[in-house]
Length: 419
Image (cartoon, rainbow, N blue to C red):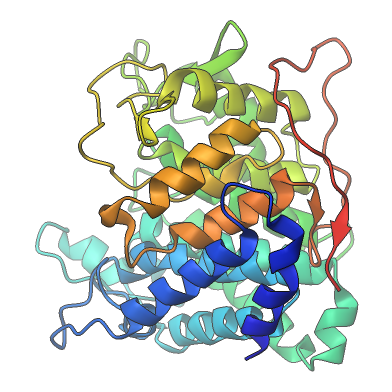
């Protein structure tokens, strides 16, 4: 009922837009309701399952990885509406994952995690768990914790202090510390310093979140947090040949960026990043930008320019090319989901692209029963000038004064605070 109240409250504020904010939120609610009713046989949990089933599955088949989109959407809807019902749902799913954690083995002995069952995994990975799956889901938990860190009144007034501390301890010990010390995944820190650009962005975001929360002098502060995210972001990962950081992977082309998919042990990377995995990459960088951690306004604008100028075929029902430089196959007939892109760069996308995303996606049957409308609502809210009810309090990193902000986004800045 409270969610409906916020939908009705926001409706008149967006009647002039391509899709109203209320329409997008209602579409998300419809999708979630439909997905929760989706029947699956016991033990057959996958990306098509209901979130409640997926988050209570024990995570053995990449379930948390796929369900994390729903978790992310709930958090973002809480941020733009202030409706605690969204936070409460996210908390239920987080608690379900943590309650299913069990002692794991091999070099992760002494920690909690989730064993894996797919036959293509080695015995070691099955016993230790899969680092990519864990970082992929828990980057959203870590980001939520930074927001709670910056909104202590919300934490205290809702009796969340113990939950906040316990959840933070779990992420610190059983996600970051466990995989930092692990030596099975490509040697020391190999679980974090992955071979693909989009993969390393998830542990970068999680490590940066812990570094943000644990200020100097905190008993649980560790230099490993900064070492991890800074090595991935710009200073260089020791296990890869240069370019061995995300910054070094970025290539300026006009007002855009493109970047390579892989880090390599010798020679230079040659494969361009695919569009489908780039939304999560953008999102992790944008989360850090909002916390004032390294990535700048100029970076965000260049990434947005890449989406507008290279990825998408404007006017063709929101279709996209295969690779981020605009090359590869024409994906016009596939409409493959790229969820996170729709919330990754709000305020930097032009209004025509925002309108095209809203119209095109809601008309594409492939997106039914997916949380895309929730991401679009978040992006729309910020692109229309909204101010998050709950967000990080840091001032985003400004552009280097010697680096002009490029591109020509036209954004109607209407300051709107929802109480």
